[in-house]
Amino acid sequence: MSTNKLARAAYAAYGATTQNRNFRGEPMPAWEDLPELIQRAWHNAAATVAMSAVVALKPPAHPVYPETAANECRHCGFLWPPGMTGERCPGCQQAYMS
Image (tube, rainbow, N blue to C red; front, side, top):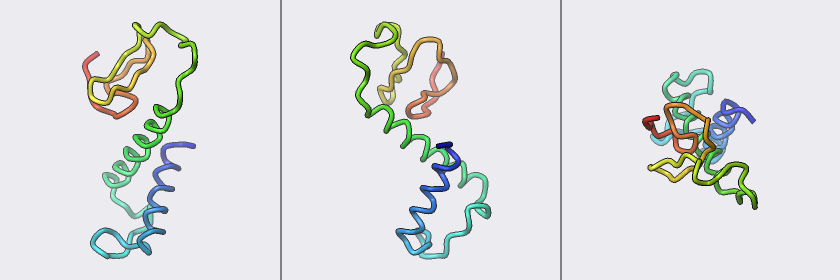
């Protein structure tokens, strides 16, 4: 499932729980009417929950790469294989220096 679908599903679940009211008790706008920043916040929240679920899964009995070669996030402890690069931890999205 894409992050967009996860974000929309999370937003809909929030609305289903609160009778489609926001934290102020006001009616929730349709997804399409949310400001870009709020949609991005739901995307980040959904991606973080999805990655946390992946991290919670039991690792394979035999790692596909040496554990000493793994990258580990100092913020959340997420491990990812060598060669996977970027500016943020795939687990918590915390910025890090390569």
